[in-house]
Length: 226
Image 1 (cartoon, rainbow, N blue to C red):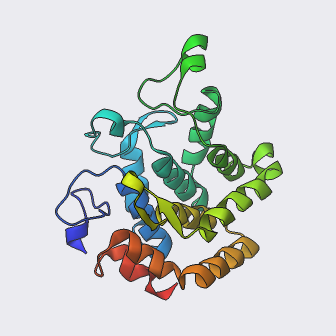
Image 2: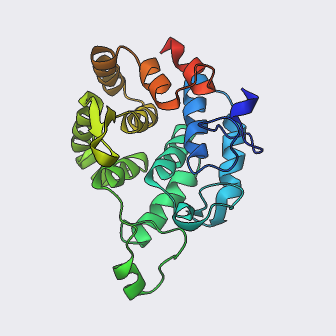
């Protein structure tokens, strides 16, 4: 497993790399699969903090260019982890998201009316509903059925078109649905999502091994029993 960990202990998609954008996400997935590394994840998310409700993508703060901006993948993973463990991180995120008029910019943090108006770091409605739900927001509960429908469509879909018209199995969206499912922690939702994955792909394990592509990747190994 060590070859898939960076110097902070975060899970990497490939061996021999160091600072990767979605390492927090991959490590949260590992926690959800195994229950392990909870304290490490919590500590490393705290190292990402730059201010209240504002976080870097990686505890090293070494990402460059557009990778410095918080991706919705990482944001979803951090909020889901915090909600699962009854922390305050997801509450901080939600307050900052609302302050930024339902957007999230962790680099060029908007303060004035015009800065908020011109803030281009928009969030997908699906993510806003999920973040609201995790924070017991009225909108999160009112639009929860829409969130579930969106995720069902994502789970049912087998293929996506990427660069140059190439078609591949859509796995990243399904793994994010897995993260949301674990945070939602609803028996009906879990049963439904598991049934869809089993019917369409055989198992969650098949999704994990398609995404990570290494038989000895820790998330592939940990997903064998689900």
